[in-house]
Image 1 (tube, one colour):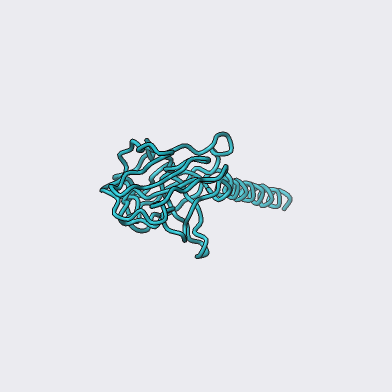
Image 2 (cartoon, rainbow, N blue to C red):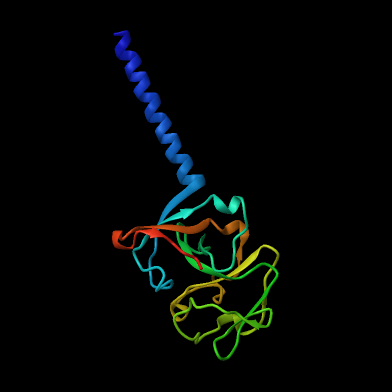
Length: 179
């Protein structure tokens, strides 16, 4: 009887340890998320399943062109995934030709699928605060992003993490390159 009780306690302790480890991993290291919609095409497609790295930004700040995940303020349990375009302290504007201007200079990037048709609130210069980022989807004409007042500038504290690994579909499995 004593041996059976020890075995039950040992198994219970092992299961408790595994559950605690999973909890810590999910809440502090990584989290699974699914892309819904086409705003990040061609880099990410609808129904791609990703692992979000939640720990690296504890050691360094987000960088331009990182693909990040953050909550949408007007819908519970809704998260957006976008690319960082503007960094803290910069000014961002989209001119009449669809160019993104950072501090008055054209941003050299190749992530947008096509010429931006609607600058949204970025038709005028937007000055980012010390902890704010301007984000956009790669599918620029089919993305609700910082150009839209409902999203606006993203505060550093709102960033959950950066897209790190695509786990589904299996034929696209691999690390997500941000640059």
